[in-house]
Image (cartoon, rainbow, N blue to C red; front, side, top):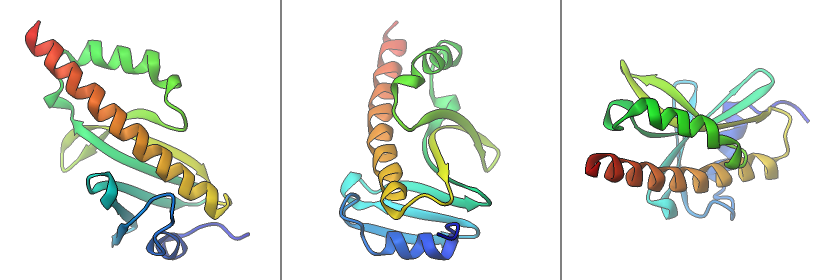
Length: 141
């Protein structure tokens, strides 16, 4: 199988894979935005580059998370409990954002690519809930 690219990924996700439900797909430069309507219009950004596919969900601006040092330490200690996803920091328009991302081979089957995005979306929902709880706990402290 040839490596996935922006065009083939667009075609894959535009077909509304059952594991993802109803989705909107748009291309922004070299990035594919897959909006999962049934997950609260969650945006998953997908990039195919060389031998890898990277899928990412922006969670929250880093400045919105109180006690960042303690949060990041906890995220680093527990991230292996989150299947197929990793916490990270990305800069978007000059602002740091927490993200959850996963990567896989650009030669992965269509089923594995869809599974990666589905699992990432579920993990992102869990991470967003965790971050909301963290904010509440830290603000109350």
